[in-house]
Image 1 (cartoon, helix red, strand yellow):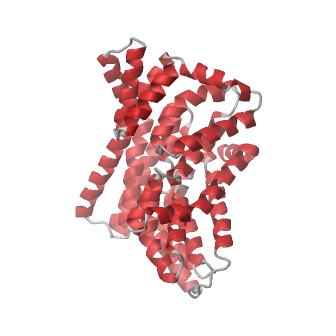
Image 2 (cartoon, helix red, strand yellow):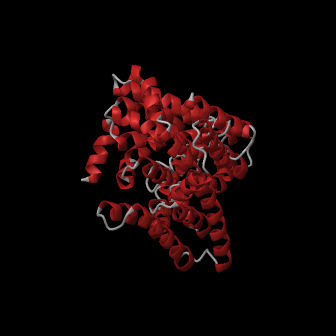
Image 3 (cartoon, helix red, strand yellow):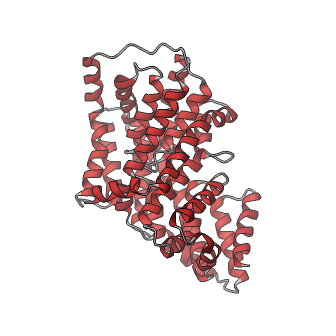
Length: 426
């Protein structure tokens, strides 16, 4: 009955249009009343403790880094480099999108920031070249969701804190899966554009490629600094976020000189607002997480999933399907915060590596950002690219299927995640 009370109150408040953070608080209060545990002090204490976490400081700094990238010229130079390298190939602008998206994913860790930047820069170019606008928007949306998989990743930070799993290990484990997602988009785009009759721009000269590389080298140094620093133990993921934000600010203001002091104020305000939304959501979710533990819901979920516990693969497939369904109606952050405390005891009972599961879980939640009807990234691409939501949804379907196929391939072959993770972690 406790499971029903929690889910029913959460869905009822969401159906009324109440923001998800307040819906989580309402479902927590409902569960408190049902269990005769209601106490405003417990409520306030869990909210405060939910946000009082050193690793979560990475969230606002990665948000800031993403905003600075887009305004300060780092994103534009990455797109220019990709254009110089592969723009001349048939369907080259699509490959430019994928390549630029993968590089930008290693800078900001935010699907929304990456999708917004790519939409603003590439949708007009792809439409002018003759590509179908819906397909172009779909490709950009699908590329944007690689952002939370390739480190640094805000999703990994939130999952790592919620599940008590090493964020550094999650970062290192996400590199190869993120690149495999990019490869699946590359192959899908190649299949879709094979029948198009669009003349690509001429091949760039070596001098032009060299110029684009020199212009982008400062942007390309950022992921290298972060990964080497994490691998060598120079700084923690939280400190890496600070390094990313400060580095992006310095490069944007003093190297590229595209960021003014006046723009800097607006960037800080925008980043603070976005971070406040995420942090309040995390704080509210900790109330539900505490009650989930007190009500012993994980053991009830373990009992429900008992028929699947005999096979790790079967259990993971069942969980991935569950997360896919939830992802169609709920955004990434609340899904992580609600399902992580429920699913982690199941994962540990089945003997599944928590880091491996975390990578699959974040990939699934990332793809959920482009699954209709909620699809946050779809809304961003539709708004920034001025495309109808129905058209973006239609255009994203083949790319979404390709990314789900990669995810289930990792379920069938865990070594695709675990082998590179062990090698990178040393």
